[in-house]
Amino acid sequence: MEGDFEGFVPCSSLAVDSILRVGTAGAIWGLCMSPYDASKKGLTGLSRTAFVAKSVGNISFQCGLVAGVFSGTRCVVQRHRRQNDWVNGFIAGAVAGATVAARTRSWKQVVGMAGLVSACSAAADYYKAI
Image 1: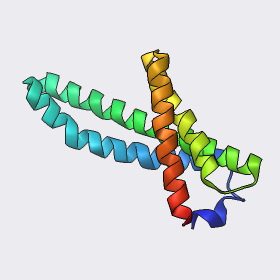
Image 2 (image 1 turned 45 degrees about the horizontal axis):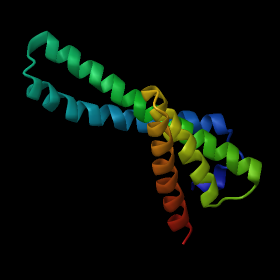
Image 3 (image 1 turned 90 degrees about the horizontal axis):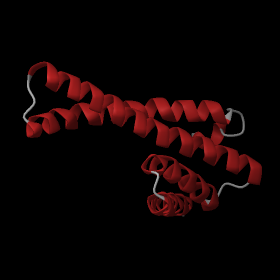
């Protein structure tokens, strides 16, 4: 279904769609994981509620950021190259990985995360085509 609309839908719309979908999944993951983390820290009452809310927001934001950067970059690269192959996912994965790791301000982590995410993305795109 995605292949049917790629030529007609703007890349920004695909990025926003990815942000909303994966950001929502991140929020659900945060709602499942954060109460457990709060219990491990011994938080109760209002401090627990604040911790869970902050964790849900952070996880949702990070998931949405990665998804938006990845899908937007992949779409732009695909349209620029006029090819639908694993290279698009490789480049988009590198950009998305570097974006996530940029907050660490460590070049080693930026390069490592960019390499990891690009390799996983390229492998997924390559095996999807088979």
